[in-house]
Each structure stands twice: as C-alpha cells, then as structure tokens.
Amino acid sequence: MGRFSVFIPNFGVDIRIMTSITDDIHSTIGGRHLRIDASHPHIEYVGRVKRDASGGVRFCLPGVQIHVRFVGASVAMEVAPYSGCFMVELDDCEPFKVKSGRCETVVEIADGLPWGEHRLTITYCNEGELAPPVFYGFLISSQGEVLERPELPNRRIEFIGDSITCGYGDEDFSADKAYPYPEVCNAYYSYASQTARLLRAQCMLVARSGICLAYDRHTPGVGVFHDMLTLYPYTLFAPEHDTDLWDCGRYQPDVVCINLGTNDVEQPSFEEEAFAASMARFVHEIRDRYAHAKIVLLSGPMLHGEHLASVGRALDAAMKTLKNEGETSVYRHDITPMDGSLGYGTLGHPSLSEHTQMAHALATFLSGLLQW
Image 1: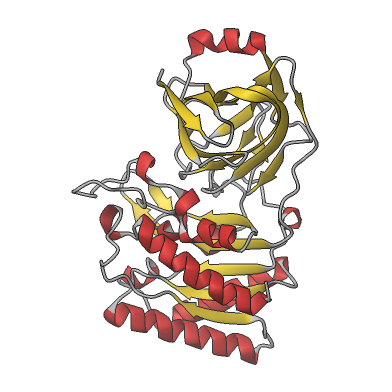
Image 2: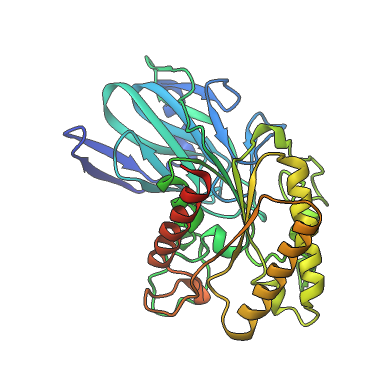
C-alpha cells in the first residue's frame, strides 16, 4: 500500500492520495463509503465499453474515460486486479496517475477533500488486450451522493491508429528505453488526447500498438494479430473471444483522424496500390458509420525516407480514388517526422514533448478545418 500526501493549492488543505489498497481492507472501506455501481445512470463513459457479466464495465482500448460528479470528502474506485494505470482529473487539480496492481481491487483516489461537490474524470492509460480492465464503480463518503451526469463538450473526435496514437512509451525517461512497461505508456498524453483537450472536444481512441491497416500478422506464442479492417467493428478488439459489435450510434464524431501505415510499410509484402485500395475501403466503412464526419488521413512521425514517401504516395492515391467515387470530405495532414531533437520514448517512439508538438500542429489544422 503506497500512501503519500499531496498539497493541492486549489483547496488549501492536505489531501491524501493513495495509489492502491489491498483486499484485506476492502471491506472496511466498503463499510464507511457509499458505493456507486458502474451501471449507475449518472456515470458517463467515453470510449468503447461493454457491460460485464460480473456487473462491471469492461474495456480494452486506451483512453477510455469515466466521468462522475459527487458530493463527499473522499473517493475511490473498484476495478479488477491488475487493471493497470489511470490518469485522474479531480476538480481543478493537476492530473495525477494511480495504478491497480496484481492484488488490488480498490484504488483510493483522494481523501480529506473539502466537503462538497466534486468532478472526477478517470482516463485509462494503457492497452488491455491481454487483461482487459473491469470497472465496478466508485466509493464515496458514506453521507455523500452522486450528482447528475457532468456536461461534456459537444465537439467529438475519433482517433484511429497504432502505438503512436496509444501513447506507447511516451513517459519513458530511462536511458535504455527498451521495454514498454505499462507505467511509461500513457494515452492521456498521446498527441490524440492532447489535441482533443486543446480543442475542448471529447476524444475516443480506437488504437492498438503494432496494428496494420490491412495486414494480419502472426506473432509467435500469441497467434494472429489482426489488422484494423478486421478489428474495427468489435467493442473489445477480440473477435475470437468476444463477438460484441460496437454500436457507433453511441458516439458520433465531428471528425475522424486515421493514423495508420507505419506498421504496414514495414511488411515484406507491402504494396502501395494495395494499401491505397485498403485505405479507400476503410474510409468508406467509416463513412457508413458516420455520415456527416470529416475524415483526416495522417502520416506518422516515425516515417522517414522511402517509407515516408511510399506511404505518402499511397495516401495520395487513396484520396484520388475517394474523390472519384464521390467522397468530398476527406483531408490530409502530414505530421512532421521526428528528428530526435525532442527526445524519444520507448523503442524510438515519440516522447511526451514530441506528442505535445504534434498535438499543437494538429489542433491548429483541425481548428481551421472545422471552424472551432
């Protein structure tokens, strides 16, 4: 159990924040707290989530958000063990990270808050394809209450991508930067999430590290690693184990940003014409779900040299095909290739500073495109 204290100037009081709480004190917490079940209608979710048979809410994609407003002086959340890391936004305080390890089912977020109304947003930092997190609810002060759903921005963006969009290794400040520990992979600081915050928009990430647009990959010991064309319709990105299809009516974005191709171009069988045709097909599938959204094709910052040129030509070809087929709301935004001046994250991925630079450029582009 890792307790530490943080002084938050907004409140002028000492607020205790704990990263996790072990099961042996779970019952004590439950006894002195009011439980707000995950299915409570006043809890707002942004992202692909599914009601679990256990009564919780299951998800696996990074960046899923849970919003709630409550009256009380303390708050914790119940999750399945080993659910990973979450970013916490509490009122006007600086965001901070909490973690659920292998044995923790209750994660205390804050204690000693001034009694009154508080607003809380929890953002899932990691990717949960191996152990999808399950959220069971919140625990607040026993005399507290949950309030009406918080108002969220009317603007909505969906980001579709790979490890770059996931924020893979963006908090890796180590010397070797060789292994993607969950603690250093933070979707909250990815260019996608930062762009949405700059534009005061809701944000849904549909992304997985290593994914291609149109190439299934076979990983030793893991099996088939499906491409985005295969996985996109599924809520939990696991068609072999869960066939639940995502209801796109639950989130209709104003704009969809697609950042794919970095992994495709690395495949020995990569062909520009085939990739262009697959991208055009994927855009049509997006259009079938989102009739009025603008769609923006991005080039990834890890592309250089011939790989960058090849993906660029393929995206140009896809744009030409789509225009000929009557699609008039597709656009291009090329992310500036990394040069190392802002450092690197894990395995050569963008650093946090690089993500911030990417976000400012993309936010400027989208602001002009959407008149936001």
